[in-house]
Image 1 (tube, rainbow, N blue to C red):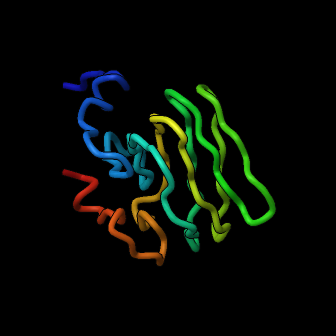
Image 2: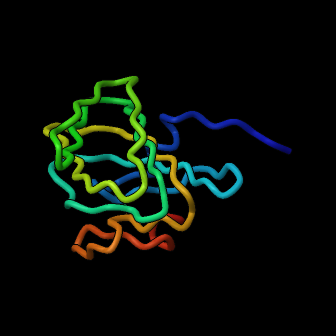
Image 3: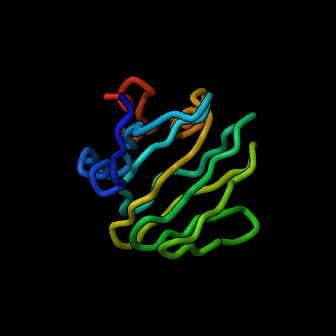
Length: 121
């Protein structure tokens, strides 16, 4: 039997910044809950768009042509191949929607990079 969950309950599973957790799937798209604080890394996802929905707090996404500031309730789709760098001055909760094939930090490998297996745990 299907049962609902709340975003608040999904975010309870997230214990580390920049370490998304898969909380659902719609066809080949993964829904991920992530808590962000600080800066990630400049990266791109070739062949995949990525949607950021701000659940709590605010997020600045830096782009090569200038930053975009997102507040609670805002969402933004980063098109495939566009270099970006998420920056959260304070803790921010984000719901990410992206294809299952999306690498966490694109082709950039950092100590914050998480594998899909880590995101599924």
